[in-house]
Length: 209
Image (tube, rainbow, N blue to C red; front, side, top):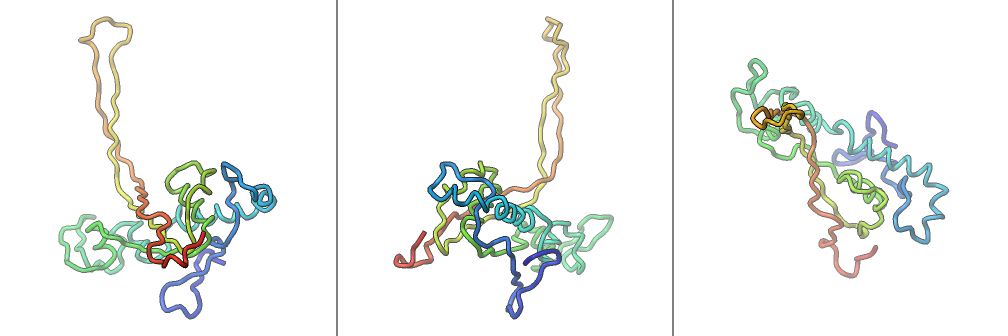
């Protein structure tokens, strides 16, 4: 069971962790169109669906898991080593070539790579939520056994332009019309789906659904 803090997998040669949120179960929303097994799953959907949705919140819509991801989440000034930048008045004035997480973030390179191994229904539901698609369509995604789906999630600042109309609507004089252009800075994430259900690494005799 994975919780906070995460429990490492015993004997693993790399950072591997167990999670009960990746095991088989029906998502919290019944698929549309329904299948012959939809009604059979309704009895356990109320409990298993909560678990799968909780897994999305913990694993994806959450703070970072690894130390590299924590640096990416908080910014390069959070790096405890300060090995790739000289800090002066909260600004980066010198960048030394290296491959630490904070320097990779400055160079717009991947910071944190996480591999999830779990049941296809869990990933179908997660993909719909990540892409902000109707979650009741999760069963329409074709994910074969052993298939690979890849996401890239980047954090960035967005400049949103908006127009403000200040003219008097009761006036017939168009010269009195004034439009003001304003800028608003927001911070958010961009989710990109690179691969969905890729099975090119498997021989034809091993392709199953």
